[in-house]
Length: 173
Image (tube, rainbow, N blue to C red; front, top):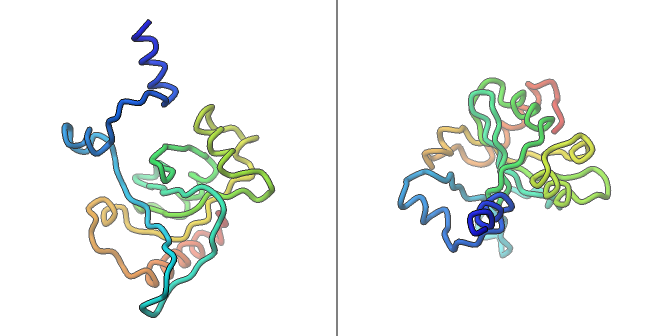
C-alpha cells in the first residue's frame, strides 16, 4: 500500500518530499532544468530609456525551441504542450534555436490559467486550447540563455523579434 501511495503522489504531483530542484541538482548536476523568469517590478523609473509593455492576464510561458522541437514551461517550471502554439514558434524561429518569453492568454472570457491547468492534468485537446495564444515579448538565442551569457540589449531583442514576425509572413501568435 505504501508504494502505491508514493507512486500516486508522484503522478498527481502531490507528494511533498521537502526536496527542491536545487537540492537534487547538487547531488546530480543538471538533472532538473532550472531557469529564472524576468519579472516586472514596481517602483520609480531611475534610468532612461525604458521599455513599457502591456500587462497580460494569463500564464507566463518560457518556450525553448531547439532543433525544431519546442518545450514550454510555466513560471513554476511545469511543462505544457499546446501543439498549435508550438508549430507557430517553430515557424517563428525559422530553423534557429531560440528561447521565447511570453504570456499565454485567452481571447475570450474563459480563464487562460484554468485552461492551462486542465491541459497539464489531462493533456491538450482542441476544446481546451483553441482560444489560447502566446503573446511573445522577448527572444534570446538558445545558447546565450543556456550559458547565461550576455545577450543583446532589450531594444535590439525587440527589434529582432519584430523582424522575426515580419519574416514569418506576419504570423500572429
